Length: 229
Image (cartoon, rainbow, N blue to C red; front, side, top):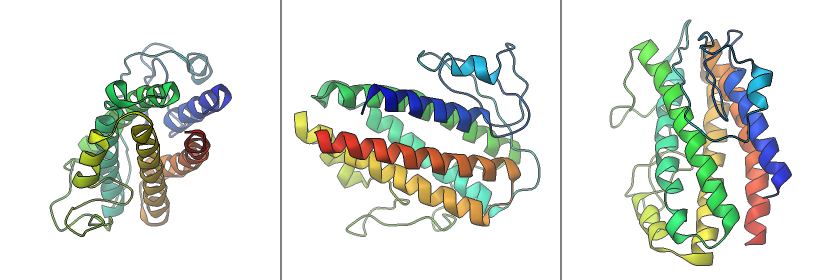
C-alpha cells in the first residue's frame, strides 16, 4: 500500500466520520465523531484533516437523533461485531507479520475501529438498544461459517478461521491477514448498502453511504498490497 494511498484513506475516513451530520463533532487526532455533538475543543473539520497523520486517543460521544427502525439497529449491531473482530485481528501482526506495511495497516486499523466502536455504541445508547442482537434475530445478517457451524455475519471470520490466522506467521500470516481484511471490508460494504436501502435514520444512512465508498477504496488498496505479498 503506497504512502499516497495511506493519506487518501485517512483523509476519506475523516470525511466519513466528521461529515455525517450538519452539526460539529468532538474530534481529536486522526479521526472524527459521528453524530450531532458540539465540538469540544474548537477544532474544525479542515484543522482535523491536517492532523490525519497523528495517532492518539479519540473522544467520540455520539447520537443519532430522529426516527429509526430495526434495520438501523441491526446495522449498528453488525458494525460493532465487525469492528470488535477487526480490533482483535489488528493485535496479531506485531508478533506474527513479516511485512512492515501489514504491521502499519494493523496499527491504523486498530485506531480506526476503536473510534468507530465508540461512535456506533453511541447510536445504540441514544436509541436505548442493546449492542448485540438476540440469537436468531440478527437483522438479516449472513449466518454460518464455511462449514455451517459458526454464527457469523457477512465478511467476518469464523472461530476456526481466526484460530488459523493466529497460528500463521511470516509471509503466510501477511497474506491471510490482508485477505481477511478484504473480506471484512466487503462485508461492511454489503451491510452499508443494505442500510442505505432499508434504514430510516438520516444520520446512520448518510454514514452508511460514506462508509461504503470509503471501504471500496480501501478494498482497492488492500488488493494492491496483497498482490505485493
